[in-house]
Image (cartoon, rainbow over all chains, first blue to last red; front, side, top):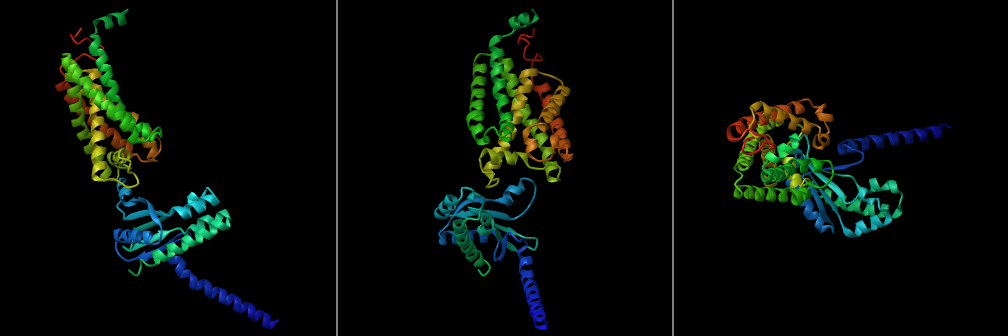
Length: 159
Length: 226
């Protein structure tokens, strides 16, 4: 009995430590849904680097949303740009699996300047949105997209 | 009987040309409303309605001039010029309010990105130019409608006309689309700005038309003054 209690105590302790370790990264992300990465350079620089990486990673920029400019029409001064990325093959696979895939692709990547003046890159990993469809094919393709996005955005901080 | 006598005294050609000019001048302000009501894209409305309307108006004015309808020529030109100048007054109020947080958005810039179909990209010098050109053309169009329909009137008529335009604007789909409630009730500085701006527009329009329009008679008054 004493031995069992000891094991449980250890398990609870390990779990607590694990949760404590993971807390800072969650707080840094700022959102449980979106991935946020700090990038080097201005918003325009990061957008330019991202566009280059998108092409090198076999994807294309399908659209741009200049939110900073759009918001200037309501008198708000912010630096925020979004690009929509994807490719035809991935799109075909996802839409073939479920015609509602448009909620996640093309993937929206937002680059903005935060209150501290840091340039941040944020996106919602497609797997987190598409998981709701419970479709193995979608999960597989979304997982690949997640990997590409993580690889691209991971390179922005060190550049 | 009175209507029959009225119609007999009218210069029918001038009357019909006045209707053509009123109809074409009335297109411009309505395309923004129609676009915000979701009827069609503003760029399509501009391409298929506004540009043809401007061309027809110019051709009609040329025809009016060649046919010697001097009263109507005077009204169109005086109304358009007074409308443009009056829009400067309206803009002074609107821009002051916008830059002090009294308006939810910069409408001429919004009109520009809608006209050039670049809302997602945001405003550029070209879209701003188009937006302001459209805004001033609207001012000219309302001026033409005022002068052609009413003729020379006092400043008070202009003020009343401005208030009517402002009220109709506040009740229109573009204000609904701003998300500030019916007639801007959730942002009181907005309707206040709209009324002050349109008072300025109407006052200047009425004053200038009183000076520049030569004949007092309204649309259904014969050009010889009867």
